Amino acid sequence: MWDFTSPRKCIFGEDALEYLSELSFKHAFIVTDPLMRKLHLTAVKEHLTCEITVFDEIPGEPTLQIVQKGAELMIKTTPDVIIALGGGSVLDAAKGMWPMWANPDDGLDAIEGLDPFGSLELREKTNCKLINIPTTSGTGADVTWATVLTDKSSDMDRKASFGNRELVADITILDPSLTKTMPVKLIAGTGLDAMCHAVDGYLSTWRNDFSDAFLRHAFKLLWENLPIAVEEAQEKGEADSEIREKLHNASTMAGWGFGNSQIILAHSLGHSIGAVYKVPHSVVIGLTCWYSLSYNKDTEAERIAELARLAGYTGSSDEEIAKKLINGFKDLLKQLKMPLSLKEMDISKEVFEEGLDNAIEYALNDSGTLSNPRPLDYEDYERIFNYLFEGKEIDF
Amino acid sequence: MLYGSQEWAEALMKVVNESEGYEKAAKNWEGDFIFETLPDGALTEGFQIYCDLWHGKCREAYLITSDKPAPDKVEYTYSSKYSNWLKLFDGKIGPLKGIMQRKFKVDCSAKSMAKLMRALKAAQELVACTAAVENVEYP
Image (cartoon, rainbow over all chains, first blue to last red):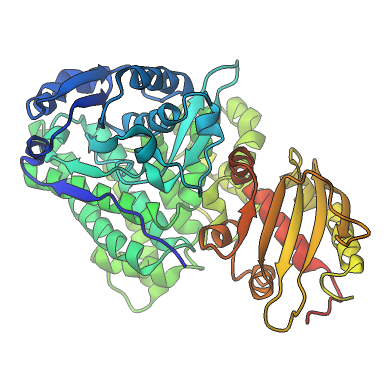
């Protein structure tokens, strides 16, 4: 048995935000960040006729502590809809606030002790729905059920990951007008994150027919449109709205797919590099995706070749076509001006070596390791991290 | 030795305690288990194995009987039918995927479940140890 969890509705395309006018709520609790508040809150509020509370304190890296603050306000205001308006951080923060509100006596345990497989009765306990409105293309967090927050309660930041399928939103609204203001670097970084979700989910040993259907098309849309979006944004200040719509849809499709499959090596590397070396996910994930493709190329030649054909590559064998995609992926990283090694990300050799053991430990215990097609142990990770630092191609 | 016997439990403990991979992966782990095999196919009678896992080692492992019951409070019970256990040892199911597929049931508190999810490598290494026990006769 497997299951494929989806939002109840996905509203997409031009004027998608207007869908909010068709819904009726008593009190909307909007979770957002200061920049999204400035750029997009008015557009959202235009379509709401209910009472509104806005919590706009979400930082770039959402913390348990800020989520607790938001949850306390939810407990006071008792909304019947939570609207998360923003990028991955905002979407993840809202997912953390909801169970804390539903279990007010549990404090941080409501998240840290969250049963990933049990029944949370979130909707029953709070009488509330969750609507996600992503503003990047993107993390896919608008349709996934797992998330990571940072605990800043001690000297050493600690990651707290949690998830449960009830955290998948009731509705996701994909309005391409919201991605108009994305800077070039963010288009590139979040687009690569989405592409990596598609690759990861497609190669994962947890793949299934349903996730495959989403991920194949997501990958194709991203491969075709991401370079165009970045180029247009660089030359004209913004990408064409149709291109942005394709990317926005593809990012959610990739999230939908991998969220019901699993991440693999690219993300176990990305998560650990983020936790230990503090490199933003959108900066490192393209590179770790390339390393993951390279590491898995023999084990999953057939699957990588399928993705390569979607990208337009041809050849006389799966191995040949897979290799073309892997080389093409590196070219894409160069075209998007992404760093090609950890040392290019301002990590000194000293800092790298000091954190290496922790990074390996972190990666080993990431769920991406379990579902990676080619097995990974401590020594494999040690080698991969060292190659990553230098930007050396995988040759083992 | 017969799978699910006291002898097998002792052999498993030995394999776990000699495993560098498990020791490394589980160096921070604290928690005890009942591994329950339910009757299915050629296995006509189920059994339970108690395992006390502590910081990379197995402190105790035995076949639970009326003469030697499990301790009063065991943190985890990991349970499935015999054919699924065989698939786990063969690598056809993973320890986490098995739970998600509802093939394996884990009985523990929500907090303990969250703790288990952060020790996936240790779980993988433990399964590898189980598969590495030699000279086992499977019904």
